[in-house]
Amino acid sequence: MEASDQSYQVYKIVLKDVVGFPRIESIDDVLRLRDDSSLPKFRELVFEWAKILRSGDGRYAELLRKDIKKANEDLKKIKDWARTSALTIFLALPLLLIDSIFGTPLGNILTGVSAVYELRSRKLRRENQWIMLGS
Image (cartoon, rainbow, N blue to C red):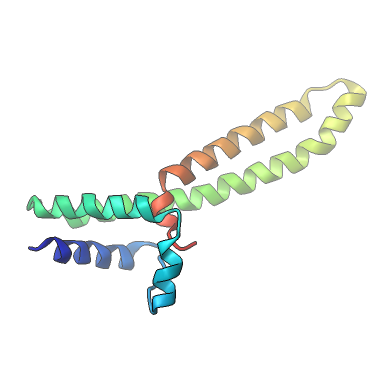
């Protein structure tokens, strides 16, 4: 199988399995995606998956689907973590005012929890940047 055929096979699997993957229907779509910051990581993974395909490993499609499934799950987690981070910081602000009056640590604790959620969300976003192509 030629490298371009392998890349096309990978693209077909990605197109089918990635939730929200952009459809390329015109040259405008190509031009918009060309400048997407997620493109280099996506391209790197397509080449990696095509190399697995070239090796003759018959399980390549399953490995690819496993990677995509994990990334889709992580994408959902990113939204949950970011939402929780925003909620905890929203709750922490009035508690910080109460803390300053009564000397309790509740606002500081929630602020710390919010930071942990935000850091986890950013880490997942960085690890799965390729799946956010076009978003």
